[in-house]
Image (tube, rainbow over all chains, first blue to last red):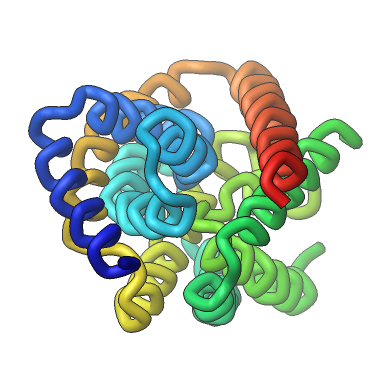
Length: 134
Length: 130
């Protein structure tokens, strides 16, 4: 059941990359926001993949995380040419985040999907509060 | 913050960002950019640029970990991301054309609105389908 659902999802994604303007729009829109705001783009791609394109939360997270690789590369290239990238400070943060990402992904593979939604929501509320406080 | 203290803080904050991004499928820029502007004192443009360089290895590590566990399909995700890369180039060029204060305001408004909407949606769905 789970395997069948996952297979059909992959077939759908493969086809829709060519045919579905929704997915093209989500990828493009996520990219614009990533380059404009310095975020991965997952913050907009995951909700859109779930709420608009109808993907399961966990699958949407996985697709979004992979998509962030070429998206961030393109942004780094543009900002790098402009001389805005602080390489050493990025290295410090990245060293910690690579370790942390493995921990987080390990939890994701085992986590309950509804719980993930609540955690995701709580995370975003926290970010909003953080920005609002300053 | 400066010198060794700064780098200890950067690595420690990086771990928090990594757990969040690996768990939630977002790159962590929503945490990194405010941290770099408010705590480290970078300009909005430099914070965003540096944030993207933090996000890249985090996304790679998270994606490889998911792939080992059989969650998602990395090849398809990368193809999806190539479409996004075109948008990212345009977004970065637009950011460079804006002033720092305008960009910072746009960042705050965007993340605040998205955060409220998705948090509300998550809580609503949880209560509708217990």
